[in-house]
Length: 327
Image (cartoon, rainbow, N blue to C red):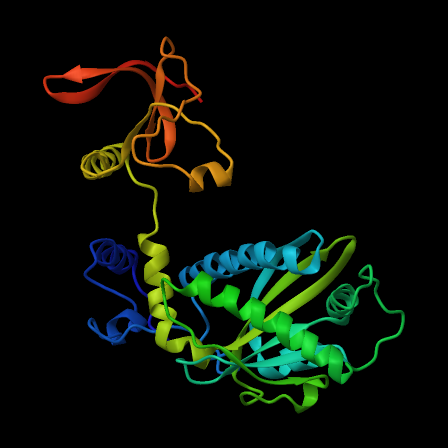
């Protein structure tokens, strides 16, 4: 038969727990300085932290702005590239989500080890091909694989975008990006094992009135050497306080004030036929188109900034500033 505690014994136990003198069996068995435990999902290893994702978002937004600037002159139409999402998933999940056929560019990420994949959807790439070949950028009604000429155009467009990627990442790493191959079937593109984690960056691309999509798939193992630098760059990117901004402004103004700039006083100008210029001799007089009663213009770094009156200071020619030229 189990022992029954008296009321006095119950009161003593409650008092001991309240004073911290008595803990649970679990607490007493737990080591005081034991290792810290963290959850780990073996199906999704090496996930990117929120800080690192924030840094990646900043870099890939810069890339979208670069592409939005470079493509319009080439395609002769308005182009806007919007970052939609940055996700983490396995490579198999990415491949199974890609439609067939499509345009998949396999990118060498040197100096990083490994490759990445850029997927250009048919709704994006065929209007681009149509505009490059002289059309109005019409979409196609039935999906098909790219021809040899269309593949060359896709390669050129992709190289232009890789140049944009280099510029947007140049503060972090100097990429030497190149295209290994262009494929249309995602099932034959195997840059890493299917269970490897990848970072998927999704874009919405507006080309005139046409809307398409573009996806970049970069294996996490490829980004590992620089992923910590990405998070550090985000950590130190912050808004300056008013005191820091004033100090930096003062240093910049002090440095700029020492800069040497050319100052030219334009006494007058005139236009002569070339044959008269060829016949000019020493001692000839050229009449300038300036009235002696009107002020002359003083240019600073070839920009008109002041009006002045010519004169002398001692034995030197000089001008006296009379007014500022307002923009």
